[in-house]
Image 1 (tube, rainbow, N blue to C red):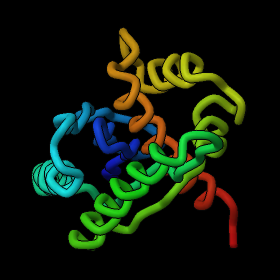
Image 2 (spheres, rainbow, N blue to C red):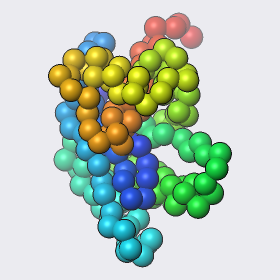
Image 3 (tube, helix red, strand yellow):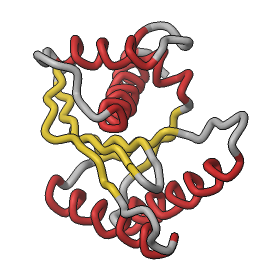
Image 4 (cartoon, rainbow, N blue to C red):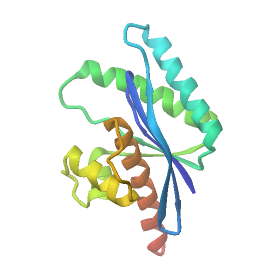
Amino acid sequence: MRIIGIDPGTATTGFSILDHENGKFTLRDYGCIKTQAGLPPNIRLQQIATDLSTLIKKYRPHLASIEKLFFQKNIKTAMSVSEARGVILHTFTNFNLEVSEFTPLEIKSAVCGYGKADKKMVQQMVKIILGLKVVPKPDDSADAIAVAICLANSLAFKQAIPA
């Protein structure tokens, strides 16, 4: 099964394309969709939708996963990330992708086994789980990989537990 994982943002949206078959992970691609500062918000959001559509057409994922918002302080940042999430969710819907959303706590628990793991711990576990030589950079792409791993682990857990 192929999963697209997204760490949403307006300036930088991390993405990952991850295959998960028989308990084995294969990282197909990762990186960031970057938008230019100073452009009107609608243009930046349109670029995210266009670039994400290109990725979906290229890799044809079966499922999508995205990080849920969790902000305690900066409401301005929360608003712009919410707008980016809306565009991303809309794009997923246009491609009929089933979407799963995970909180940072859920992602950290799925990847590290500890919901209060710091960013470096998550990045190191992504490297270990995927058997990579180096931690994926930039951070937003490593976070997007963790989101995809979280969905894969969640599905594997659901399949292991009889209904």
